[in-house]
Figure 1 (cartoon, one colour):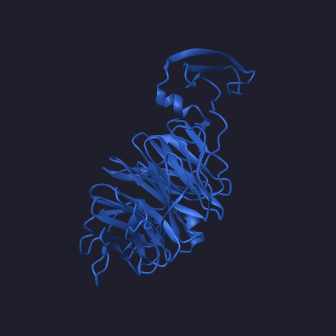
Figure 2 (cartoon, helix red, strand yellow):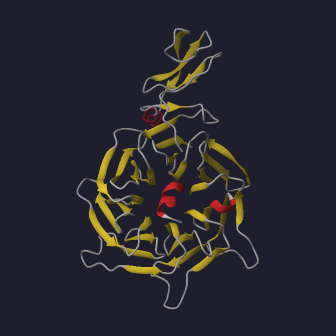
Figure 3 (cartoon, helix red, strand yellow):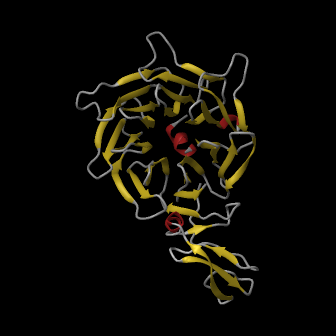
Length: 376
C-alpha cells in the first residue's frame, strides 16, 4: 500500500443548522435555554421562515452535554434517531489520523506542510498543536503529550498538551505510518515493514529504540494492550498479527491471529478480541487474541461494505466507516450480531473513527474534509 493510498483510506458533513420538517411540531434542543418546539404552518419549516407561526417552550432545560453539542452547527437529517451531528472542524483539507481524550479531539492534516490540531469535545475553537510538519499521519495522545508520525520526514514527534514546541521522539528508516502509545513507550509501523518503539520521552536523551518486528508486508494501523502490539499486514501474505512489547525473539516471527486476509487495514481491541476491516472483501471481522483455531475462520461482523476503513469498539458495539462518496458510519452489536445499521449516513469519504463513553467521532478524508461528532 503506497503512502498516497494509505492517506486515501483514512464521515463528513458541514451542516449549517439543525433542520426541521413541515407538518407537526418538531422538538429541538436550544443552546442553553429550555427545549423548544417549532410550530410550522406551511411547507417551509425552518426556524427563521415566515411560515413559522410561533415558538413555545416544550421541555426541560438542556443538560450540559446537550448544550455543548448544540454550541456549533448540526444537522439531524442523516441520523436515524434524529441526533445532532456536529461539525467540530470544517475545511480541513485532508484530516487523517484521529484520537480523543477526556477533553479534546485530535487529528492530523496529511499534507506536505501539515499539522496537528485539537478541538474541545462538543465544539469550540480549533487549536494548532504543531505546524510545518511533513505529511503527519498517525496520531496518539496520553495525559501529557500528543504524538504523531511525519510520514514525509521519517520522524516521530510529540508536543506537550499544555503548549510548547514539538519534540523529537525517534527517526525511522522508512516512512512512519501509524502510531499507538502506552504509559511508557510509543509504537509505530513503517513503509519498509518494520514495527518499532521508543520511550515517550524520545531517544534524544539516551532512551533506547526497540525494533519489534521486521520484514512485515506493509504493516498498517496498530493497537496495544498490556502485553502485546497488534497490527495488520496489508499486502503480501496479508494477516493480522501480534508481537510482544519487548519484540519478537531472535529467529522468531509475529504470532498470527488470522492469516489469508484480503487487505486488512484498521484495527481495534477489547479485552479478549481483535477487530479489523478487510478492504479486499468489503468486510469487518474479529478473532480472539489467542488466534483463530486450527481450521477455523474469523467471525464476520459485516459483509458487502464499500471500502470499510476505520474501526472502533466499545463494550457493546462495533463502529466502522465506509469510504465512498456517500459513505457513512455503521454500527453492529457485538452480542447477537446481525447486519450493521447506518449510524450516520451521507458522510462523504468516511475514514478514521474513534469512540469514547458518550460519542462517536470520525473524519471526512476529502479535499474539503472535516472532523465530525455524534452522540451514541
